[in-house]
Every structure is written in C-alpha cells, then in structure tokens.
Image (cartoon, rainbow, N blue to C red):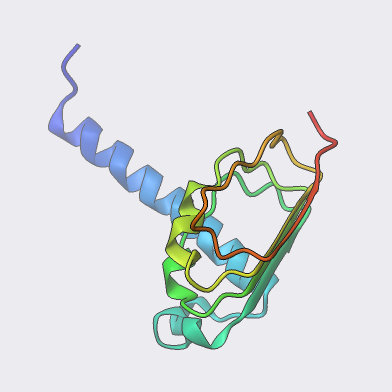
Length: 120
C-alpha cells in the first residue's frame, strides 16, 4: 500500500503535535514556560511528573544539567531518551508505571535509582 504524500505529511504533523503536547505537559508540570525552554532549559536540575499518563520522554535535550528525574504514574515503557541527559543525571525515580525492568550499562552516571513497579 502506497501512502499519498499528503497522508504522510498529515501523519508527521500529527506526531509532532502530540510530541509538542507531551513536552508542554512536562514543562507545565514543572512551572516551566515552554516558550523559554530553549534558552532556560539548562537552568533546571530537577523534573518530575505525577500521574499524568505521559507515554514518552521527550525534550530532555533541553535540560543539559538535569540531575534528578522523578516519574510517578506515567505510561512510559522506554527510557532510551535518557541518553540525552546521561552525563548529568544522578537520580532517577520510576514508580507506578508499566516498566518492569531497568538495565544500565557500566558507563551510567546515575547514583540512585528508585523503582516501584506495581502497575500493569
């Protein structure tokens, strides 16, 4: 099945729109004005999300000095985006979400992990 160019463009636009909303949710939950994210994102060392159903981690590249990330009750199943903050992240909390296992390589800089797996 071949998709028309307009269908592909609509799909990409919808994906960008959803990802922007996820980033906007992350920012508003932490008192961050999304319009200043590119210039002020590196000022933040802690981020947290509580019971928002966030399905993906997006925009972590803006938080160059992020030391602590707390995720409670999120629908995140992939932590691969943490690579964007792997040089600065020291503490990671993942609680009440669908994740079952967290694997780390030997080069990880995280000093503390709190994982409370309880939701299916």
